[in-house]
Length: 118
Image 1 (cartoon, rainbow, N blue to C red):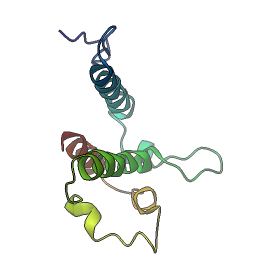
Image 2: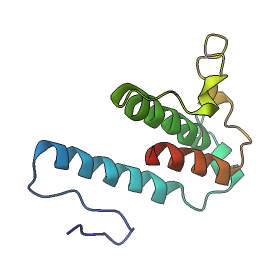
Image 3: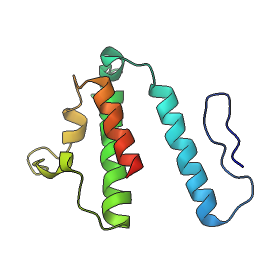
């Protein structure tokens, strides 16, 4: 039985095997990220701090790409999701970060959620 904390995150197992522990912490981290970015509108997702160009919207899109690349493509041998196929990574190796500016918040969240589901 999984315990859910006050923020709706599944608690990782206290004592389990390697795979169960890894998956438990992965799900906890995903839920933490979802919780911390929930409710943010475009301005919040596009905000930067100091001289950094990094945004939370860029991070959402980057994590969608990471989920798809590592877990779907590398681990399971699937083809990339359609959204990543036409990207010219040679022209813009940080495309997922750069293209997120101005993206619809719901579209960004859906992209990330679809990648974690795959």
